[in-house]
Image 1 (cartoon, rainbow, N blue to C red):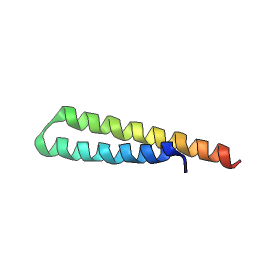
Image 2 (cartoon, one colour; image 1 turned 30 degrees about the vertical axis):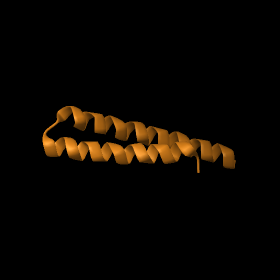
Image 3 (cartoon, rainbow, N blue to C red; image 1 turned 60 degrees about the vertical axis):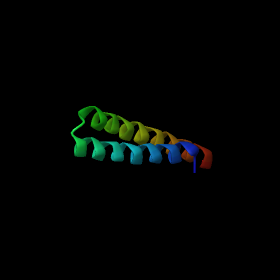
Length: 57
C-alpha cells in the first residue's frame, strides 16, 4: 500500500472530525476546512491507488 493512501485516509478522518466539531459549535469556517480536508484526502488516496496499480502492473 502506498503511503499516499494512508495519509489520504487520515486526512479524510481528520476532515470528518472537523466537520462534526464545526457543526456542533456553529463554526462555519471549521466546517468548511473539514470539507476541504476530506476532499484533499480523497484525492491523495486516489493518487496512492493509482501508484499501487502502476507498481503492480
